[in-house]
Length: 431
Image (cartoon, rainbow, N blue to C red; front, side, top):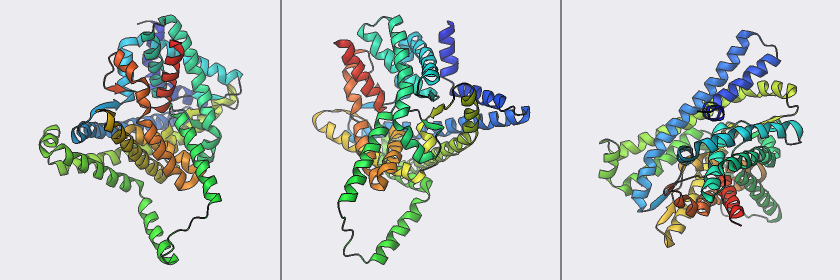
């Protein structure tokens, strides 16, 4: 294993090493005592590990749903799964992927240091996904591995610097903090959600809505008040929604099939258990995010003052969830419904469909809902997340023939940016 590959494997695949390094530098520049330094470091790492534990719980629950949905609806499914697609890419093009990651991080830091794009991208798993996508596009199309590493690394660094800038103004409205933004390769979807929200708000100002003309105003307000009280507990609503999804999928899959994959459990008990596990995973992730934000922002601000003045840290979209928990949930639900609609529409003319990914609709769809809400209120959240959820289930088709040609018959990348950028890059190379 050469030096670059070792760096790629041991650093970029372990996001906590990058975060820990920044925490240590921040404490050093602040001249904190050893006790306070280790306290901040451990709290940050605990936040990251708590997030990982929550994510593992969510993935475990969702994996069972991924077995049931194709069985229930008789689909030949394409599964949008970033982790699986990246793992397949790493197996085939590991050296190139790790070189792209290494060069990309350096380019990102240089751009932050010497240009007006002061964004330092610290979402490790997203870096892996984009690096894998670039290698998967470059190498099968005949690009030399050295050229793919260099060009891919430069492109990665540019994307890590430019894309966060698109949504930073909107992110500041959510977090009330100019030192943090989102580093997630569905940024195009988030930006479009903001624009959709603006269109919704503009339309709402021009049109006079006649709401529930035959409902007394007092009764209407009471109904809305009860509904809002119910939605205050996002964990409860998540659990209820997932129970419905699991029960429906289990019922349509058949009692025998569900009992087979569950080790003999009743399909009703199994559905409730998996739905509650998903809700618990969400709660754990949010707890970890809160702990992480509390510690990392002051540390990063200290590092930025010394190394890259006015730097902005770009982190995973989940950093927004504690700010707008209920809106995130609303975005997730309507994004998933948009994905389901896209699946059924594509199934009319083809048995090959993109399976709605609970995981991607939760994170990306939830993020789209938050950004849509920021500019368009609740209507903006609902419309933006529904539209982008529909798009999420269609964009993988842009590269489906390319995936098939290299043996990725069922597992594909699901993030919007990955599909769009990969498609445009492929067309450019083929010119």
